[in-house]
Amino acid sequence: MADPRAFISFDYDNNSGEKLYFAGQAKNSRTPFNIADWSSKTHLPQKEWEELIKAKINKCNLLIVLVGKKTSTATGVIKEIEFAKSQDVPVFGVYVGGADTNTSLPTGLQRNRTIEWNWEKIANAIDQVMKEGKNK
Image (cartoon, rainbow, N blue to C red; front, side, top):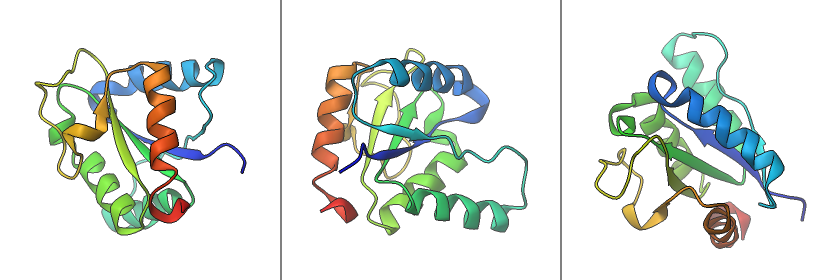
């Protein structure tokens, strides 16, 4: 199988820099996945945004949530997790921007599926989730 395609979910208002850094590092890491940068580039009406993002997540093998200190209140991230779960797309999180195990998580993201930003651990998490959901 080709490298899995990952949708990156992040708090646009607070973690855009970390998302760019994560995507850049991913290209240079030995981590076996491709990032589908399908974030909405323009402001859309809610219903149109939901349809677009749900379709994009459905084309991915997994969803990686970049968890910053305020991500638990990011409604877009919460919706993206919901879309992934409704389509059997596995989800895990990566702490960014000083967030850690004491940081509140967005609804739908499990603590035991949220890890530190470490490429070996991320590769292991990808291997694990590729055995789940619609990837079976």
